[in-house]
Image (cartoon, rainbow, N blue to C red; front, side):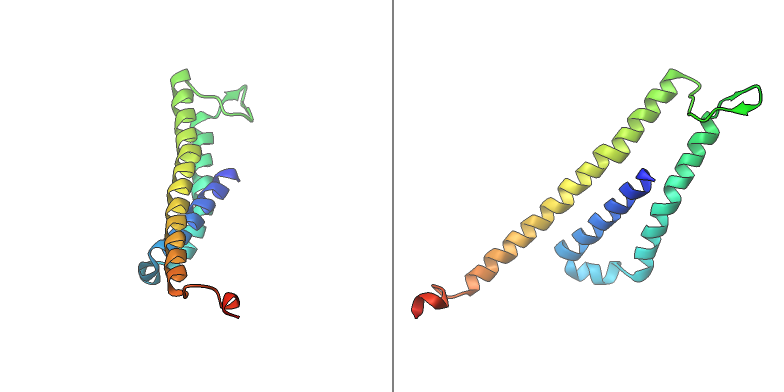
Length: 127
């Protein structure tokens, strides 16, 4: 299930973002039930989505269900394609870029602070 994998990657990315960028808030927000709920949502949402898609667009010929999605109109197919592309490709990339970009900014800031705590030179240069 590709959709479940995409939802799971988004939830892991957001969890890492909250833990690194907002460490105090992560202790309040990221409870065990929240993580379990995100995992359950990653399994249930794609099943519900695909079920609704198949039920609404199933096509029968002589009482036999065809095994591919057939939309009633070309507009419905276009809207579904655009929504699918936007929500599972564009949205995922935007979440990745935003969250991991902020994580990199925080890590660089912490590295600069830690570098400022060290002395004027390394301990090997004094010997």
